[in-house]
Length: 419
Image (cartoon, rainbow, N blue to C red; front, side, top):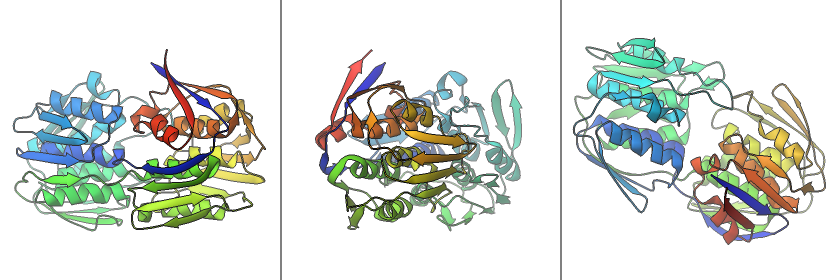
């Protein structure tokens, strides 16, 4: 197990390249189960979550090859069962349910473990599978899906806290080989859903409306192999923009899509930072006085819950009082206690965090609780006096490809130490 030592007080300047989207790559890799032919996926990030997904595909019988960010998968003959010892390490492993059901009309996948950021049920996934004609049984910690035939249906996937991204992808993957037309209402609008839909279309699927709350899928008899390049990771890009804001002179994020970062760019602009962008880059730099913010996380295209922790770190170092409200995962404030250990002045009341900016933070031993909380602690440590020791950094390796090396290239001083 590794820990990260961040020596604070260094200014960041320069350029950083953004990798492929983890949240796109995972369901796209799962979608390769839908065809017996070879699929080639480019710009696959080198992350532990990706490693787990490739392990699952191998265990299901796929031939998997990986080299320099390119993954080739051939699922000529596959199994339909993914046991707990494989899926327990990653909640996103449930996205194999849709393609297994779509292709083989059967699936047995263990329920994923609990999530530190709160309850993340898959009831909407199961509701969608039932609407398509599958018999759903949950027994002994396993989800069993069986169907003699899948038929198109109208399905509403809007949940209590908004649409489900994984659920939208799962139902799309099951429906592409169903008979007739499937209509998904309350669909997630995230760019990752659009990316998955584009890959499925390249395989021969008939999908329209991806990127809106209304998606229509006309089932086809079979899909074929295809090549696809994964979109840039908008959360990695947003995290590095906040790094540039919290500790930078001038930082440019390259190989990204500014259109996917609208809410983040707007929030940084409202906070007093100077931002400019091209077709595939965004630059952030200080611009005099900084302003506190009132932020509320809402589904895309609103402010993303996956950027909430990083902005808590930024706002902790800015004058004035900011309020951050978490509506997507109300329990997603595990990082607050660790930021307070570093000197942040934050009052947490239910799903509202009131942040009183302080002049400086101080390095301290802290513990990462989840992926985005890990990133927030690294960002806060960049601005802190002294050395911050961040433990349990395996969380950050789930979603950030060599974040320490990329920040060091910008001028940070970060060490990775074996424990």
